[in-house]
Image 1 (cartoon, helix red, strand yellow):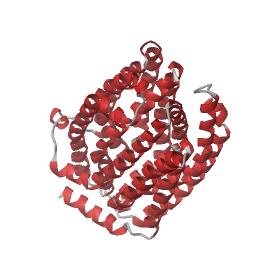
Image 2 (cartoon, one colour):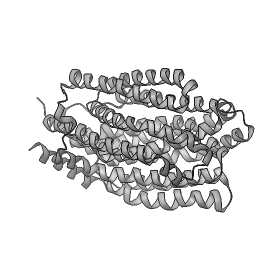
Image 3 (cartoon, helix red, strand yellow):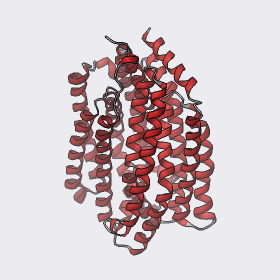
Image 4 (cartoon, helix red, strand yellow):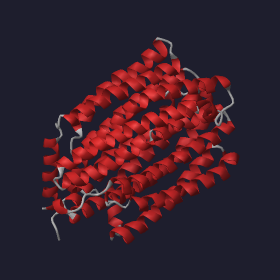
Amino acid sequence: MRPPSARPAPQLWPLLWPLFLELALGMAVGLVATALAARVSDAAAGAFALAQQLNATVFIVFRIVGAGMGVVITQALGQGASGSAERLARAALGASTWIGLACAVVIWAGADPLLHALQAPAELLPLAVPLLQWLAPAMLLDAWNASMGSVMRAHLRSRDTLMVLVAQNALQLGLALAWMPGFGLVGFAWAVIASRLLALGLHALLWTMRLGLKPRPSDWLRWQRAEVAAMLHIGLPGAAENIAWRLAFMVSMGVVATLGSAALAAHAYTSQVMHFILLAGLAIGLSMEILIGHLIGAGRLREANRLLRRALAWGLASSVVVSGLAALAGPWLMRQFTQDAAIVAQCVTLLWLTVLLEPGRTFNLVVINALRAAGDARYPVAVGAVSMAVVLAGGSWWFGLHLGWGLAGVWMAYALDEWLRGLLMWRRWATLAWLPKARAARRRVRRLED
């Protein structure tokens, strides 16, 4: 068997296109659910947006393990350390159980106070609280599915994870279409739970068939200290960065909620379109994390540097083109959600501001994931937390409320934060300050194998 460094480098395109479609399908289901909620009322759409933001905020705690798991497994595979990769995969199941349970309890028990903390309008609470509480069991299922899917992608099995997501989202969409007209937002939660159960069964089957990994009963409950510690070395800073962003974003959502139900609805509709705009950058960023992790593990640092620069150029070009097209189509797109002319006008303004925002976001999606894959996970937190607190959260209040710019002011704060962080991350990569971290990451994987 040839040494890891002599193995052919994994290619971008076979990993990128299934991941792109996987993300697009997930976002499409969210878009359809938002549209179905909007058919009930604009208030239901606002409640759905608030519940989804809180759900995502609590679930980000899973990133403590998840953000590090994929990186460490790819580095192990790059070095040819298959035994370490298997132990890490099994350890991820047990860690996901306990963290997923913790997230589920927080969502179920804290639905009402969390919504009050977001300054949710009183008329939205009867809709948002039951939705959050019904979504709580899905947190555990999502934790398991996310970790199992990440392990599959780390082994470059992205087509298999795509097939799982197709089945999951087809079931979720079909059940949501059947249940939401009669049961409202709670029907959406039921569809989520059923679809996640299906995905869990498919992931378990694929682990056995494709990876030769059959989960043991003990794998679901054990907290394996050494393996989890290796994940935490990358995951804790990565999770801290995500939590800092989510908390700052929640402050901005509090500002939007203060502006009223119409502003919440406009924010929800525009955000759904923005999810599709950032698709290419997000897919490139996640693909880079996997590929650069393999290259770092194999000691091919120059190849990792060249790959990142090439991918960033693609991401920036796609973000400008797609955001510009979305802004041009804005009036038509927004009338698919609502016929309220004032809300449509607000959304169109926000889409044009998104043309300014998205290239900055691409820097973050691509370069931060590359830094994390190289083992340089602390710098993005140290730099990003300050920008998120001051520019994103503080700027949302300053521009949106203090200066009276409303939603446009909130979007300006989003854009300034993304550009500031993105340029700082690029400076970190371009000056090769990540190289010592990459070498240290390879040494940690070797110690785990020994």
